[in-house]
Image (cartoon, rainbow, N blue to C red; front, side, top):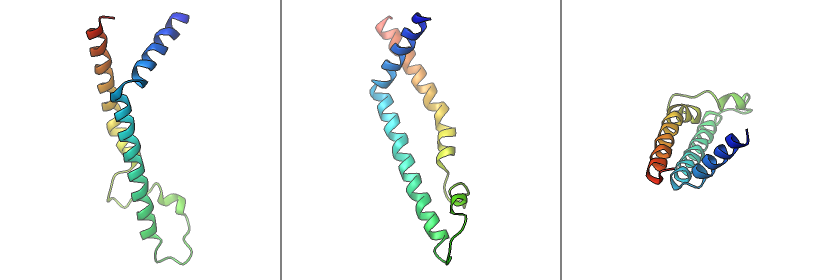
Length: 98
């Protein structure tokens, strides 16, 4: 079991120290912030005419169909990012001959 943990730790260090991983993580964070801001503006527009807005929490998850949600973004691009990182990992191992 210690051998597996050593390999796991090495792989995680390789991924987390990779420039590609940091760029992809920054991209996901930026998209998340942008989508959260757009949802906030959409909720403001939806509740603008209401005297006492109710069920604001539900407005976070129901969309008017204008844009996609963060969950849809991760659902679509998450597996793609995983495949890209997997191929990058294999390529890096072949180049360094480890």
